[in-house]
Length: 70
Ligand code: FES
Image (cartoon, rainbow, N blue to C red):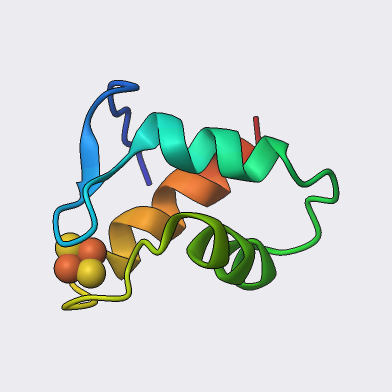
C-alpha cells in the first residue's frame, strides 16, 4: 500500500479541526510507539480527534502508522 502523505497543516479530522501537525505533536509528547491502536487512543485523548462523526478514524490510523514507522 502506498503511504499517504499529508501536509502538516492539513485537517485530518474535520469535526474537531485536528491537523496532521497536531497528531504529530501529540505522538511526540508521548515517547513509546507501542502499537497503532494504543497510540490512537493517546492521540485521541490529547487532540479529541475522531470523537465526532468518526469518519476520520481510518485517516488518523494511517497517519499514526506512517509516523510510527518513520
Ligand atoms: S472528521 Fe473526525 S470525528 Fe468527524
